[in-house]
Image 1 (cartoon, rainbow, N blue to C red):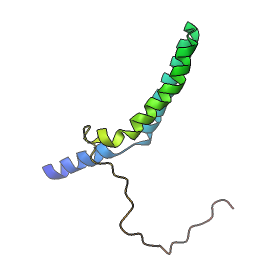
Image 2: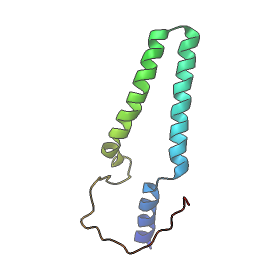
Image 3: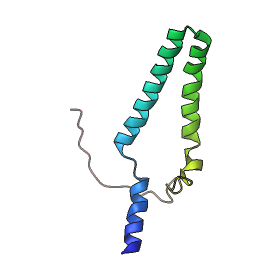
Length: 98
């Protein structure tokens, strides 16, 4: 029973819910807009320009380094590999645009 519960906890921690993705995007948008408004209010245009360039760069670096830090957060390995074999299917998919 203990192994089943720990396996469930490990898989539950690796699940990525859509609300978590939206929350991260919302937090980034609020931080970006808040910094732009703050630096515009202070009249510090060079800092505002740096904020507009460096904040998205920092977000991109954080996403690129996620596989390295995922093991420290207990998420398990994040590997981007092609499948060993791909099988075709005879399924007929309806055209929903007509």
